[in-house]
Length: 131
Image 1 (spheres, rainbow, N blue to C red):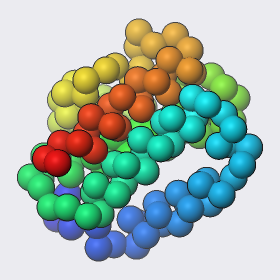
Image 2: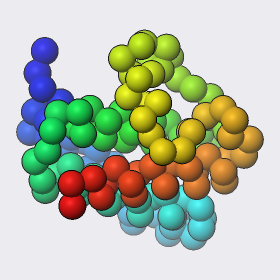
Image 3: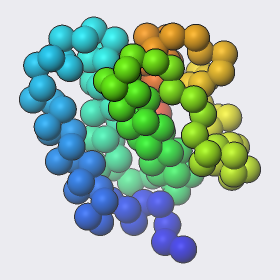
């Protein structure tokens, strides 16, 4: 299995960057205050992943958090509801990584805005690791 840091040089990471650019240009999404705060933090972590080396556990946490952020963003844009914990977190390894995040992303979160706020905090904290 490749190391998590190796994903930076793949088409998958390029796709994330292309999607990020499209969202960055969407004025309707950017006018949503909570989404905008979370999105700015998402971009901070994306830049941190692209620009610096670090331990593999950092990249593992970063990619998991970017994946979870995409799910939360999609749910928020689609219907404004709270995203439920995805199946990936039923795997012990991913559950352990997610348990190290500073704020919970799913339960006991009760609103989409609260979920976006927790997400923004987690993204910012992880982006600053090793800076």
